Image 1 (cartoon, rainbow, N blue to C red):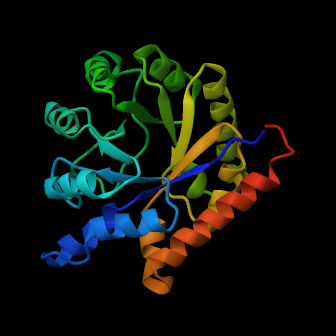
Image 2: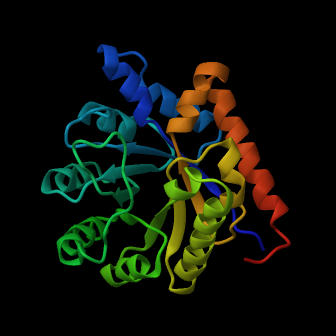
Length: 250
């Protein structure tokens, strides 16, 4: 039986546009509600140390407004842990964070950062927050996530999305292998970063991936077709890819 595939909509860059000018428009919480109405299964929001897009008030309003799960992206810092424990979102995805980066660059080093990450994962889990680690698609990182007790991994698929030809095929195979291995060792597998209409179908067809988190492309495409249409089309492409792979094995 084919596993259902969830769509998480990241609303960070609605806030990026708002913050470019200041004020309240466009409102990321309004975008989250619209995504919910369009069939999104969850909302993702990354509260960064420098508050470059999502704000503390946005998180408070999201928790109080949306009726679908909130995935709180966060760095492994004491400040972010306290915010997560205060709001208790459905999930917290721990990501690497650098002040100078435009967007998250690469996956979390769960191997090298094992001892640092352990207390964060423990505290989040004890509070009933489902912990996910945003990692590169390789076995060492997946084994580290498993040993840390994180129930979920989100595979960073940016290298696949940003490449072409033989290199893209190689990157795709890394994702296939990692998703299969995650399933074998009992980790729920998600994927995200850089997915577009053109790159999403192969990833959506991987049976052991159960959630895709997509944001920047959907917000950008909404400039031309509207947010509702961009989300609905992405959902349709995902569904068709999944159904097309229903008779296949990895």
